[in-house]
Image 1 (cartoon, one colour):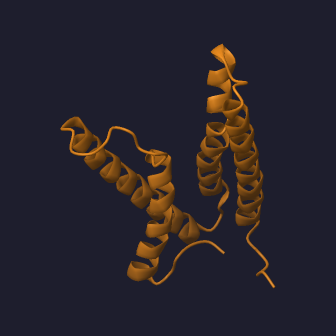
Image 2: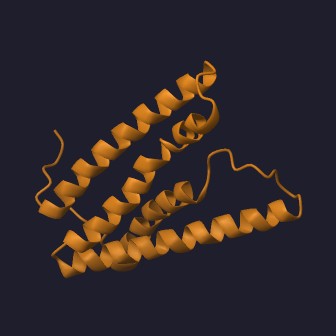
Amino acid sequence: MPAKITNPAVRRYTIRLFVLMTAYVLFLILAKWMFKRGMAEGSFAYVLALLPALPIIGVFWAVMRLLVEQTDEYLRMLMVRQCLFATGFALFVTTIREWLQNFDLIAAGDGGFGAAFFWFAGLGLGALYNRLTLGDGGCS
């Protein structure tokens, strides 16, 4: 049985995340399906290609909204540390990758592993960092 979320800010964040990730999956399936069938041309192709990015951008908003809505200062501090770690990690990885690409040491494409992917991975690593350094991983 899943644990009940008692923190109202985290509950709202979880609902937002569920809605945004559901939209992401649906938009991605739609875009891939339409491109594969040659149904995306001209300006519509650009709109369709960017459609799955919108919920990802929404997740950034949801995380920052959680920071604003979190009333517990300690939990907010943990989340800020987690976001700072994620930002540093994403900047580190993408900077290294770009310089390796500049000198043709790795392929120019990122295969879908762009800055957002590394930022989200960094959130997880940031929670681990909080757990290891403070003994507390995040919001509940």
